[in-house]
Amino acid sequence: MTQDTPLTTHDSDEDVRNRDIKIYVNGDIVHRDDAKVSVYDSGFMLGDGMWEGMRLYDGVWAFFDEHMDRLFNSCKAVSLDVGMDKAGILDALTQTAKANGMTTDVHCRLMLTRGVKVKPFQHPSLSRTGPTLVIIMEHSKPVDGLHKKGIRLATVPQVRGLPMSQDAKYNSHSKLNCVVACLQAEQAGADEGLMLDPHGFVNTTNACNFFIVRRGEVWTSTGDYCMNGVTRQKVIDLCRANGIPVFEKNYSLYEAYGADEAFLTGTFGAQTPVAEIDGKPIGTGDRPVMAKIQAIYKQLIQENTASPASH
Image (cartoon, rainbow, N blue to C red; front, top):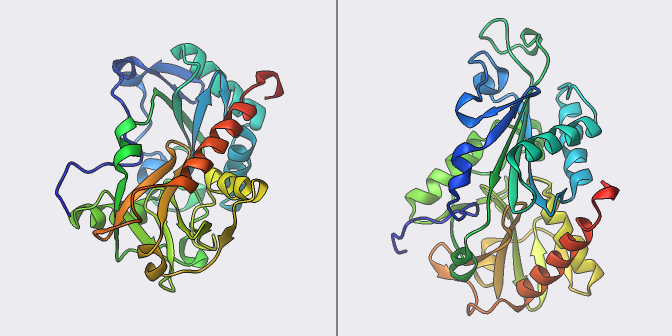
């Protein structure tokens, strides 16, 4: 593989406005240089927290309810008190967007941790101050070249594990598993890592959900060992609603290498094409099925964000 500057699915055009963004920290909205959390915070100390990535379109957070369902379900599963209801989260988002004068082409990382500990140890009972909520919003548009060039993937040794080790459905601050996979891919000369499941079937990348297209059919993993991505589910639903055959199934690298198309899904990049896997070009470079999915997904975004009053 060529040793070009690695791409990522989160590459965006540089925007100087982001140097002076304001960040929400537990009710205060401050300049990014003044946004701080304690070194005793459980998120910093242990990765004990959950997060969501969301996008703002024309003043409306796309698929807000779905993102909140995932956040609140994840927090309930690990006994993490959110500290407010969904309306409270939306109000915090609205305040932060207003403070930054942001209305569209905005990406948000909302982070919730178990809060500040009284001693630097693991036990959750040592987090006694209540949760820490941080909201970072940036002006952010995916780079055009990413969709023309496509992402290069390398299959990596790091796998997404079994649910009883650390369930991949948690969008947790504990991302070392994915960071290691990304490093392995980068060291192999690729942009991102293609991760297998514990049984050796194709699963996900270190940052996004993964799809292939074979003979007009869209395939993705069973979902047993990957993040239950909001965009992933939207793509599956859109395929079903628009007569595109779609399957959640086990498949191996053999089918992935021989695919006609491959693409990634995520909140930031929506659908990002895959150019090659392990140095093998995917298809001919024509991506008619992905192009159709991109078109109907854009339409779905427009419908979902058309009426702020509904949110």
